[in-house]
Length: 98
Image 1: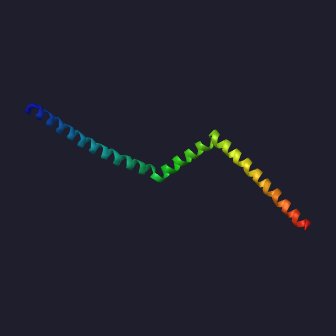
Image 2: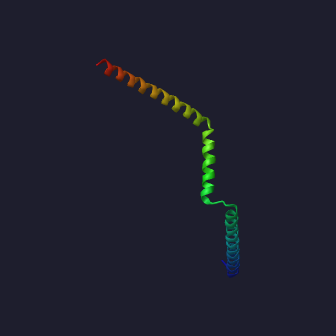
Image 3: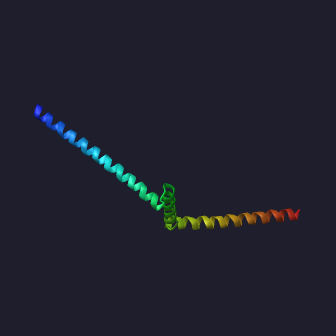
């Protein structure tokens, strides 16, 4: 590499470093502005999490898989309850027969 090429590359490197520095400053400024606007609107990290969680929960509840699973579990619960009632009745009769 010639001295001229080396000097050219160093100048390009300096220029890139200056651009990176400028971009970092602009980004920091935009991030501060972002935080200020969110504060003015009352948007906190927790409220955003709560909203996203609620939206996700509603989406899940409206899914076909959730509805089918819910119906299946409800039916299973009813059958289990009926079985325990029958079992309890049978034991009560046995004690009554004694």
